[in-house]
Image 1 (tube, helix red, strand yellow):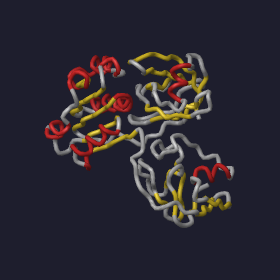
Image 2 (cartoon, one colour):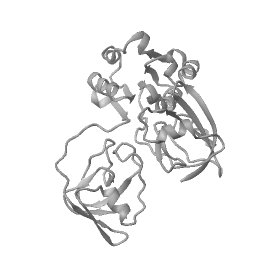
Image 3 (cartoon, rainbow, N blue to C red):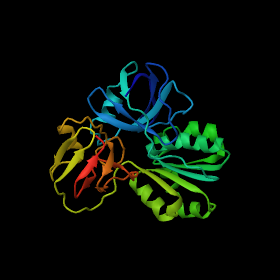
Image 4 (cartoon, rainbow, N blue to C red):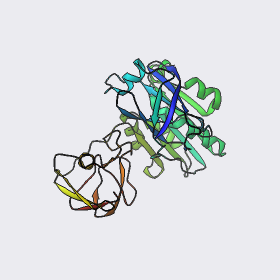
Length: 301
């Protein structure tokens, strides 16, 4: 974890504030476009937010937080109680949504999904690639950073307020792309579903706020062998691997507990996990908040 001081809390749209976190002990850890951090709040909750500042600025991180009407305590606390000057712990940045090299990009953002797209668009433009952003929101007043983006990138940015213009035509956007174009999309589930229907899967990269509903076989109990510690942990059918490990004294980090943030990633050195996350675990890795196994696993713990 890294120690920061909350330098500024600034309204950036209706219902959204920007937080600027300054490193309390020197430069902060480097990051690349698409990365996010875990923010440990004073009310004992931890939440994940995409970094939306400048990766070249090692002195501070910037995130934006929308006040969710169905808040589980994170965004509500930030909007109602968090004030500048507060010391806050943040994780090292993680990137489950990296920007790959391409000659052409189309970035699609919905609402607060604009946050990872801001450094992505800047990096794509700096690389010399053809890059466009279509930014969708219910109204201009509710769209954070819209003016900043248009001032910085001009005609590359199309701000699309649905209360005035309806929804953008993704099929028409797809028809105008070259064969090597990559499409990055972050926003509400309805927007991601529309993007999946309109754009070729091989060129489409999505980041979800919530997991996709899936069906799995009923949970079965299983055991994990923690290789480095020489311990065996039993996982009951009604508990997650994450909870079993933490109850056994292993300090595995966690955030979303839904398989979308990546904070609970652990190493697998034997056996076959049943992956249930929405990230796509690399070989030899798993996300233990949702993923399980049907037989014994050997873990790097």
